[in-house]
Structures are given as C-alpha cells and as structure tokens.
Length: 573
Image (cartoon, rainbow, N blue to C red; front, side, top):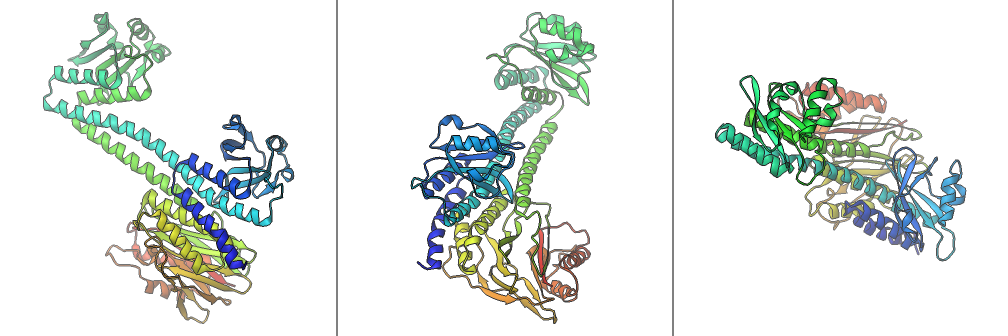
C-alpha cells in the first residue's frame, strides 16, 4: 500500500471521530466516545479516562472493562506524563499511581493535552492479541487524543456556561415576578393593595407559612398584615431593627450584641428571618418571615428576592427596570468573558524558535469577542506550521468554531502530505459544524521547511499575506480556494510554494488591520500597509509589528476598535 493511500485510510476514521465528538457538547458522551473508539481501534478490553482537577489530583470519569467502583475516584499523580508511555516506564515519583495501574491491568498511559496543558489522562490495558503497541498504533492514538483534548476542554467550558445560565434563568424568573409586581404597584398606590401583592409573593414564590408585613406610618412601623401569633408585641421590637442594612436570619442576629435581645424575642415568636424595606437607605418597612409551608430554611437567594420585592413595594417601577438591565448586562458579560477565555486559549503561549528565522506575533481584541486566531506548530524537526484565521461573527459561537478549526489542524497536521488536500478536509469538517454555512472562516496556513527555506501554503479566502523581498519587490500569497464553512469541498484547493531567502519578510494579518477605521470612517487599507512594509525591510519581525501598530494608532487616533487586530510576521535571517 502506498504512503498516500495509507494516510488516507488512517485519516478517514479521524474525520468520523472528529465529527462525532465535535457534534456534541455533552462531556459524558465525548469521554465515552473517546474511550470506546480507542479501545475498539486498539482491540483493548480495559481502559479509563481521568480528568485533571485541583492541583495534582485527577478524577476517574469514565471506565470500561473495570469495576464501577473506580468511577469518581480521585488519584494523586505527582508527575503526569506528557507523552505516550508504557506503565512500567512511568515511575518517577508516581509509585502509587503505577501500583494503581498495575492493579487494574493498565499498560499504556496517554496524556490529554489542549493548548499544551494537561487536561486529563487516558489509560489502556493490554491488547487482546497480547502484541505490544506499535509506533503506528501510538501515532493513531495520539491523533485521536489530540482531537479529543480540545473537544473535552470545550465541553468543560460549556458545562460552566450551562451552570451560569441556570443561575441566570432563576434570576430572570425572579426578575419577571418583580416586573409584574411593579406594574401592579403602579396601577394604584394603595397600601392595602401593595401589601396584598407582597403577600401573594410570599405565599406563591417563596412558600411562606407565617409572616408579618410592617409599613412605616409617620415615625413608627406598624403591623399591616400578619399570620403570626402575638404579632402585637412586635411594636416594641421593630425600632431596634430599623438600622438593618440587609436581609438577615434571626439566628445570625443572635451573634450580634446590638440585636441579641430583639433576635431572642423574634425567635420566641417563630420568626426566622427579617427583610428590611428601604428608600434611600432608610427603613420604611419590614417583612418578618416565619416557617415555610414545606419546612426548610430560607436561602440567601430567597432573602435577596424578598428584599427586592419589599423595595419595589415602597419605591417605584424604575428600580425594577434598572435591576433587569443589570441582570441582562451581567449575562452578556459572563458569556463574553467565557468566549474571550476560549479565544485566548487558542493562541500559543510562546512561539517556537525557528532556526534561521525571526518570528513574532500580535493580537489585540476589540471590545467584543471576535474569532481571530493564529498558530505556530512544530510539525517535526525543521518543519513548522504557520496559520492565521478569522471567523465571522462574535461571541461564544465564533470562538467555539475557531476551536474546532484549531483542533482539526492540530490533528491533521502530523499526517499531512498535501496542504491543499488537508485544507479541503478541514473545510468539510467545518461545514459539518456550521449548520449550512451560518458562519464561515477565512484561513491561511502553510508548512515551512526551515532547512530549505521553502514555504508550502494555501489560502482559503483570507487576506493575502505579503511576501516582501529584500530587493524591495512585493508578492501576495493568494493561491488557494474558497473560505471555510460555506460548502463542502467540490473544487480542490490550490497550493503554491515560495522560497524565503535572507532578508525576505512574510507578513500575515487579519482584516482588522487593513480595515481599521478612523473618525472619518476611512480604512487603513492594504496599500498603506504595503508602503509601511517596504520601509521596514531592515527591522526585526517584532519591530515590523511595532511599526505597523504605531501607524495604526496614528490612523485611528483613539477611535474605538471595531474588530480584532492580529499579525504574524516571519523573517528569514
């Protein structure tokens, strides 16, 4: 079988595997699929997946062919392996870990890496054939695990998003109740009606069994509505509570000297919490809570909700609107923060040193999270992958889609025999994840041979990089094909190569550079960028980026940045 055909036969299951794990955001499904695929591919009957927790602790999340009792066990791994190793070879400070693996007949350790960080570990038992894992086996395993690392990290992030959304949904539900109440309050500011609506909130929303509502009348608080025995005695207790700044449980009040006597009396009456009603930090009312209909204690969220209800009953509907705006703003900020973490996680922490070349990169995020991406990957000795891309749209969807592209590139790059063919494969994977071209990606990448100085590349609809020759001539690297994610590959991508001689400079950038706007809505333009580069041939890669950034600042003159700015510069020494 030829090398090309062998690579094709190895790549096909990788594409199917990538489609499966990237089509799901469920962590349990992804882990089960990863373990089942590895065990089936390698003819193994036992295996485990552990995910990294705090410090050096790893937790067993999935296991097959082993007792269910191992699930959720926490294992201390002093020195996690960063490469595929046989169990007997990985001892250094890990004797307990090794003993555990031997006990459960695990013979191969495979790290799960994402952005060069260990996110977990997979272990496999012996093969049914008793034959050792070959170099090709390990290469296939590594490719599958490379795909799974990003998918697992993505699923973990999505779990965090879901948890945030659950909390926000509860807040929004409470907010809707507050908003409805505020409208009712404004229909007619009748004290009896307001008290009745607060009572409905106590009974329906919180499930209160006994309560008392007190409203200030001139200089004293009076009990307006009550389902407490002996509530007449409250009149002498309430003045001692008027300087409360927030909702509080009576058991907590007992711990404070200033409120100890009043709290003891409230507890005798069956009151378990006090909710002040404020106008400009002055207590103009109070809600006293007894037992709940179904028992249990009041949560902090319950008390905070009732504090809001009480204040709405006293002040105005405007506070409800401000509260809703604050909740929605917080939700957007949480989503953008998560998306920004995903985007930043895609970028290399440190660029590799390339012999006979100078390399530098810069990315500046706009106010909104976008989808700019660049990468420099060591493919093998003296071969390096350089990539840059830009996803349409903003926020979490754009960041997740770029994560998929990065995962595909990192998985396929070690097996790549044709830049054009691999680009088509990445496009097909991207189409499967964009639901009919709802989003797309401009993408440029290539393989640099540091010995021959030959750079083999293809351009998938990205801004053509500039190749500035030492003699002052300029080339644009345009050969390639359509952008990623719109249609499956029907027409093969083109690929070309250039040779960089000493002094030549390759500049890759996103449209955030060329389309940067000034206050008059004038773009920076590719022509201006080209002129700057022609004057910068003697500078280092980092200095070239600094010069471009300086000119961008002069052009925009503090105009708000509308898009991400990303540059990757390579100079032959």
